[in-house]
Length: 116
Image (cartoon, rainbow, N blue to C red; front, side, top):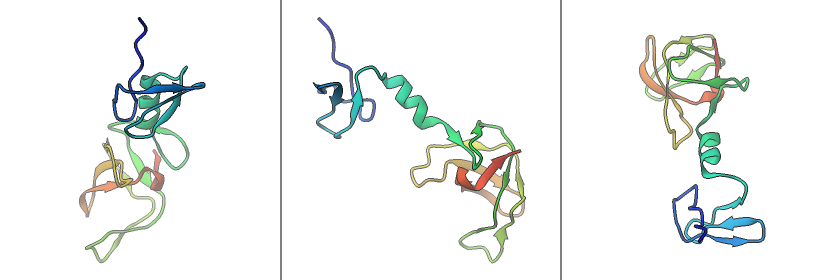
């Protein structure tokens, strides 16, 4: 007996085929039969900088434009180097955790940095 795959988004086991797609009734996710859940999970966890380079934990990045920070009177200037970044699951789009000299610990969006 062949076992149906589980939904790569929510993990539901009550998925059903519809033509060449699998459909999840709980979250509404649709994916093709030849795509595996592991490949989909890897694609979403890849973080790229503004130039399309893949970022990893411990990389050094450079801020590409001035970023205004809430609660500070000054902005993080473009060209500021940030060392030893950590990648996070940013639900709000901020997927880099780091310490910026003069500002302290904060989160950045990967679209505003480039790999150094």
